[in-house]
Image (cartoon, rainbow, N blue to C red):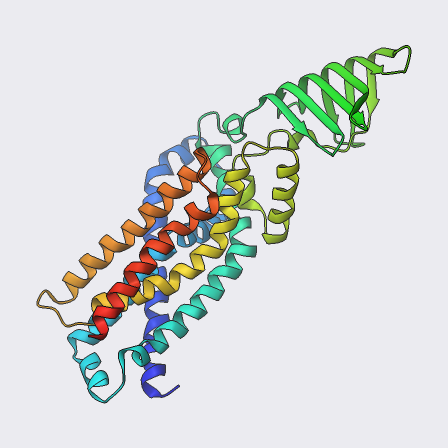
Length: 361
């Protein structure tokens, strides 16, 4: 790296850092202004609020990372162009592709940081952020933080199936419970109970109005009891995981969770896959947005930095819009989650190639 490379790389990283330091407090102030009356009215402990805003900062910056990065590159590149520094660099014989090198090095550094944060740091902050919202800020939050809690039918292993008509998270109780065990494609036995309650102290379940029917070759064996304790391989909370469960898992845990939910035939599998694929697609967007930002702002324009920033803001919000729209479509429809998550990168990648080609001319 020569002096110019180090100069541009320093500008890239420092401007991006300043952009984060500038907008994160603004986001916190706006959020506090919206929620301060509610927090005071419900006497939410200050420690919980402080922890919430720590998680909020990480969650907020990760969510709007593409906008912050794009605007920071637009800002300092436009400044270089207005000061005729880019003209001087290119006039010295350096090609536009070579001029891009420090920008791509900066994008690589940011991408690695975002990738590692998405794997290990953001999931914990997402959990803290969402737990606070559903516990204190949303009406009926503790009930709505879980997905469908009625008519739940799950496959918990290759030969074992469970069903409950409804589930109460507070009492850890499920109603109209049934457990079916198959062997070689034939029903071996079935357990039914009016309700089943989880006992956290000894990790057992208590079934009420219990009935077990064991299928025999000639006669079935029936066992009944008003109350019976048992040990099962599943956790009742697995029946209705919190709606944001995938966001709270690190990379290894997320892969295991998706594999388990896929084997159970979960209807929310697309939601979990969107979260997984975004962990990889967001860092790649750093390169695409960097190329677009440089191509758009490297020319000295009559409107100055303001015109370049206006274009940058429009493109950045268009990217976020595409990302949210196609992510939601993947969760709610039959569109492939992989295609939906990567579609914004594909579209804007083509735009980056087109703008870069024109910028070279």
